[in-house]
Length: 491
Image (cartoon, rainbow, N blue to C red; front, side):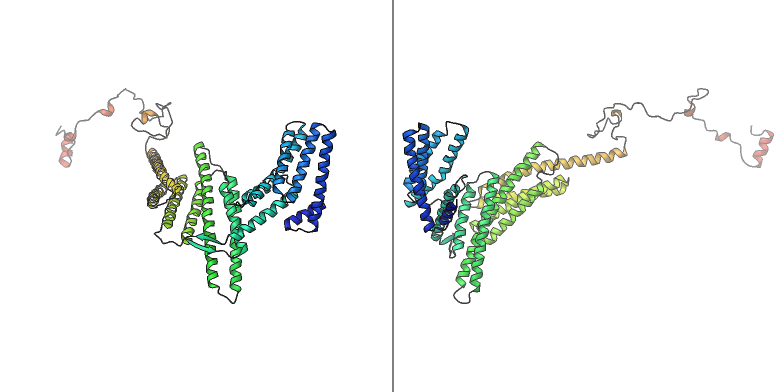
């Protein structure tokens, strides 16, 4: 174990001294005894034991060839051992099958390393991502990991030496610092891994890794700017300008990737919101709300505005047109989901006004996308689809507002008339109220009413009798009238 750790440190630091020679000597002895074991098993052992000894001898000799950097011989030995172990893994007990399968998986990165070195020796471009994938294999011993780390570091160093400049907005920006070159190269590899990721979680993890690498590049550029500012002599103006351009380049690609990340989050939130609406579930704490999409589109609007600031093209140029069309698209979506927030609060006038504003913005976005020579087809399709969605949502909101108005009007009229909730059908033949759910035709039992008392002599027409005018028979007033009445005059 001590020899293995020493060899690990020697490989990692690329030391070709005594410890490395000592480990090579031990490997040669191990290979020699493995060959003796193979010969002995061929003479006295059964076929299965002979095959196992043969595979072990090939594996040990391949390990020795790797340390001697004899890549072709190493890959031949490893592939022969792998073929034997694959056949042995098909028979025997479960423990033996697991053992042989583990040997096959352990040799896989070694074979890929040999193939990589053979490809590299022919002058082909090295694949850094392949080396990284090889390093992720489980079950690999420390010696092989150290070998892979050393090859990866050497490959990155050589590619960084070739990376002397980057192109941004039609300008070539030279790269002077080694840390900056290494950081930009690592960011390119991280971007490649990001593009290869498929599902949501893998892409979000790749985004975090990519942004971490870009932050390191920005820190390295800031360190160079500080060192340059501390210098008292020399021509610093041109170098400062180049560092500023390089910083603008890094900020631009970081903001572009931020837009992609936020759009991925928006896509996930939108699908969850639509699924919740189709399921018609009740309110939940974990349910996606339109407020979250309003916030995300606000971030996207800020990202596009940052890209407009970082872009040095003229206002009417093609890149600026594409950015403006995307900005209008995001603004339209933000108004759309903000209107949904007001719909949830039953604030109909505000919701209708926001839907109208979103419709105007989406139509304007489609118009600007059509003016671009190379428009963003994704954003153009989203803006076109949004126009149709807004038309349907406006109809729904207007209908809901009208129903609320009818309910409010019906309730106020019901409080002033006999058409109250629960009134019998006979009392509301000429009116209709959807909120009334009663099925009573008449009121039963009937309500009490005031009736006249029963007459004694059954004079039922007494209240309808019209009496004659008796004014001419009234007694005359004055003294003469009283005397005449006394003595019978005027009778």
